[in-house]
Structure formats: structure tokens, C-alpha cells
Length: 154
Image (tube, rainbow, N blue to C red; front, side, top):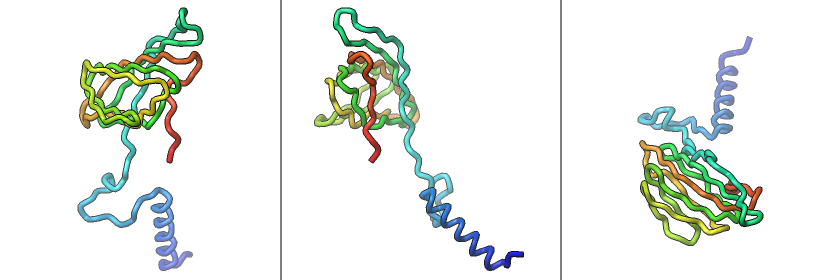
């Protein structure tokens, strides 16, 4: 039979190891709940292709259109679109966008922007915490290229 002091020490060590492994702190302020103590990653966007076709008059190029849905408070990882030319139109909601070397801009329903080939998209986010946002995005890319390449994690 395990003695009580030994069992309590074993339990304490196990709790400390679990907290360290999951990045949780065993200490909490009295006014914080367990849910508040967990830091969660914001939701991400989803891309749903609509139409894709090789351009018959431009060898090696493909036209792709897609809907990009941003749940409330969603943000895309910093990314590039390879050598694609990108056009985005806000169908619903509002998003902030920042390309490297340019200021942060906010686009609302009915507004649009484009990205030059090779542009680094460092921020794309739904500015609303309660309403979704939706984009129509058109890519003119090299046939077979990936449409979105996220930056490597830091």
C-alpha cells in the first residue's frame, strides 16, 4: 500500500509535469476561470475553390476563383501566393489586410484590392468578433502552382 505523503508528492509531481507539458500554469488568480487561463489560437480562414481553368490564350497560366470564409475574429497565417496575380473582392463583412511594405488597410463589403506576384501578405483578418466575412478571390497563376504558401512557423 502506498503511504499518503508519498502518494501526495507523486500527485504533485504529475500535476506539475502535466502543466509544464501543456504550457498551463498551476497558479491562477481567483477571478480567472480555467477557460480564461487557456490561450487559444484565433480561428483561420477556409478557401473553397469555385472554378479553375487553364487559360487557352496564355500557355502555362491558370485562372482560379475561390470563396474565402473568415469566421468571426479569424485571421490567416502570413503567406504568399507564389507568382500568382491575386484579386480579392469583399462579398460580406470587413477585413484588414497588409502587404509587406504597405500600410494596413481595411476593406468593407463591395471593396477590392489586388496583390502583385510574389507579394508577402503579412496580415489578413476579419475585424468583427461577432460576424463572418467573405471574399471572392481570383488567382492567375502558373499551372500546377500552389495558391497559398504559409510562412514557416517561428
